[in-house]
Structures are given as structure tokens and as C-alpha cells.
Length: 245
Ligand SMILES: *[C@@H]1O[C@H](CO)[C@@H](O)[C@H](O)[C@H]1NC(C)=O
Image 1 (tube, rainbow, N blue to C red):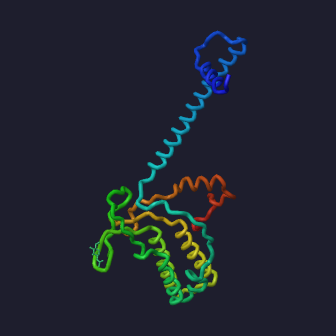
Image 2 (spheres, rainbow, N blue to C red):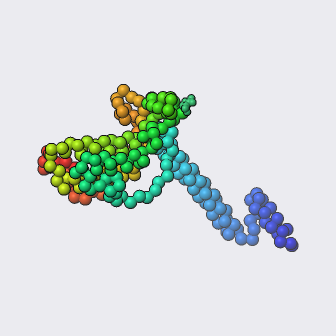
Image 3 (tube, rainbow, N blue to C red):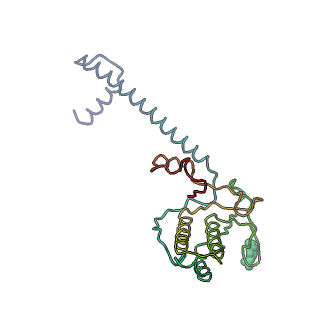
């Protein structure tokens, strides 16, 4: 018998309806039982797999449905090291108004070319967007545009630094406060850029930046995660009313 003929016969036998038992009936019965068991096991595994896939898809759809689609794509991530950077905030700038303004001037390239306004031609098709602002879109024409939140946040911080410095007129600015403030300002500047809040802000009755929906980290989930890993609890009834973070 040639190998191919033998294979053919084995195949045929496999398809044969249960016929007379071969030489060893006990062996044959065991084999049928185990084959049945295998079939049931396989069926059970297939059902389990279908359930797992179903749950995964349902979960993905549910997660997606918690956020409204945005015209801004999920942008690539990159690793940055936070370090004090005298180009943007210098330790001693707060002692001098011109020094502060000159240093804040170097923040301009950190914002987008239109100071953060971007045009979204199909803005009507996004539920998350308010009405656009009307701003100059070229030298001659005003048109619809949105403010990207990260640039609004950088502007606010720059504004606060400027007027914080001015507010010290007549008040003694100690080294500690000057350096601590500078540290916080530079740290916040880098944090704002790191978080890169790309939500788009439009025109609302509530005022600039207000009334716009932002897709954000779920802050309750964030707090829960941190609290589950809390070091010694600081907040308690004994905390004086004037305590701040
Ligand atoms: C300014 O934009 C408007 C609207 O897109 C366009 O019609 C016009 O030609 C533009 N003007 C210049 C000077 O680019």
C-alpha cells in the first residue's frame, strides 16, 4: 500500500459511521468517550472565548461612549525631564519688572502661531464644541476659530506671573518667596505643557474658556488610585482652618 493510499483509507475510516468495533472494543469505547469530551471542552472554550471577546467589545464601546468625539487626535507621547529653566523663569526675575517681562517674552514661541487659536472647518459636526470664537484668520478677514486649552493655560500663568510681580510693589519680596514662587511658576509651566490639554474652547455666554466641555482624566479615579496608596494621612479634623496645600 502506497503512503497516499494509506492516508486516504484512514480519512475514509474517520468519516465512517460507527461500525463494528475493531479488534479492541474497550479501547474503542474509551476513545469515543474522550473524543466526545474533547468536543464538549472545545465547545465550552469557544463559548468562553466568545464571552470574553463580547465583554471586551462592550467595555470598549462603553468607555468610548463616556467621551464625546473631538476633532483633535490623540497626539504622540514623549518623555521630558522637568528642570528649572532660566530661559522661561529665572530665580531672581521677580525682583525686577523688566527682567520679569523680558523673561516672560520668551514664552511666546511656547504657544501656537495664532496665540493658540485654531480653525476647525467642520466644527458643526462635533457635539463637544461650543460655537467658535470669531477672530482674525488672516490680515483681512475674521473667521471662526477655537482656543486650544493648553495655550489658554500658559497665557493665564504668564499673566499671573506678570501681575504677581507688579503686586509686590511696595511689599518686601524675600528671597524665599521669590525663589519658591519662581520654582512654582516654572513647574506649572512645564506641567501645563506636559498635560497638553488639547480640548478646544469656543464662544459661550459664560466667558473666555468657561462653558467648554473638556475630555479629562477621571479625577475621582485618580484620587482613588492615589488614596489607595496613601502615605500618612495629613488631612484630618485637627487641621487649622487657614491650612492650605
Ligand atoms: C482671507 O481668508 C478669506 C477666507 O478664507 C479668503 O477669502 C481671503 O482671500 C483671505 N485673504 C487673504 C489676504 O489671504
